[in-house]
Image (cartoon, rainbow, N blue to C red):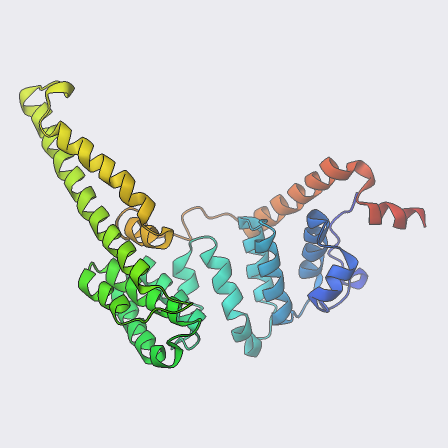
Length: 310
């Protein structure tokens, strides 16, 4: 069984690159990879920003991201020299967005987003935090970058970022104008985008109608003790339900997230369930050791067993 070793004298003093880590532990052994990565992150005193970023993306790609790993990465970030932490900004945003922690992710946004990725992430963060003034400023950045990107790969995410602002603020005509000015290309299909936008707007109106009817029926039951079968607007409600189901198949997942996120989903509170970092770290160590015991037994992974024989 491989135990977590945090003694720096027995572990390399630096992370020495993720490629080297893959030479030691293959990707096909995710549990062993987690164990080795955790050892190195705990032992190192000064961390290279590129290693932290690569490991955050790798753990996320393996589907192993957890509150425990989030705590480990936060502690590891503090080991990066202050003048180098800016280079880990994108990966830290990725980390917090994975937990819907938009408040903390906002702290890693650049003052003026420049790349298309930075612009689209900034729009996502500001909209989820309902900070529409900052989101409106991002729309202007999109407009500035669009002329140089029309007909290219970045055109679609820039236009989608603009559209998302207008959807969140319920400016449907402006949202349609985003696509009406676009040309058909291998990157952008404005006709499809406009059709999906109109379907989303129709879905909003259908749900408004369902809410009105449900409230009317609730009051009807309270006032007149009407039984369910004799309520008013039963046929109309069923028709709206059928229409809702049809529209849901037409709306893109990204647009639907904007629709639900604007009204139904609460803003994430990173302090809602505080837990001491040492507790989270202990939980991660125990879970990894339990996974290894379950998979390999007490002997440990093949490479550990072979090293013991030698």
